Amino acid sequence: MKRCGQRREETVRHIKSHDRQDRLQRESLPDVILDVVAQFVGHDHFNLFARKAILAMQGAKDPTLSEDWAVLTRVVKGAVARESYLPAQLSTTEAGLLTAAPLKWGGSSDFVGFVRATSLIIVPQNTGVLEAGTKVRIVRLPQ
Figure 1 (cartoon, rainbow, N blue to C red):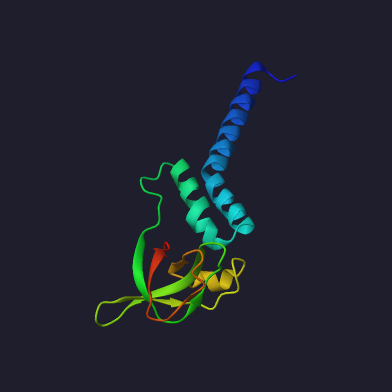
Figure 2 (cartoon, helix red, strand yellow):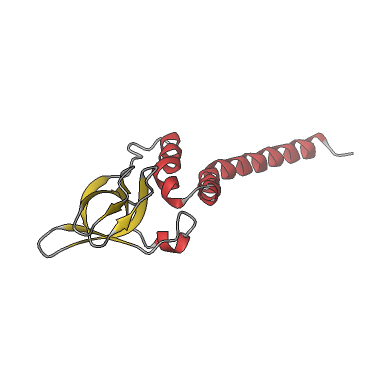
């Protein structure tokens, strides 16, 4: 039989171990959630919607991504039935003009194409094609 002191020490160790595990799970849970959600939704939609909700639940002061205006460097085509978010790289011309260069992208499951993006071009619903030189709304992605 174990003595009362040994049993108490084992109980305390167990509680401390459980507290450590619980704290670790609480601290790493947001990362796990972010990873799982990103696997099930397109990366563009994740950054616009799920990311904002998760950051708000974590107490972020301003979880929104900043929007801006840029000039397209190439033609883009969005989905007619809904608003589209297309990955792009932003740059600034010598004259100080913000430009958005659409990236080659195979859709929301194209992780490689999305990783290179610094922004998303917003193509409004029922727009179809936007020509190079068109001023468009963009969402800046976190770097």
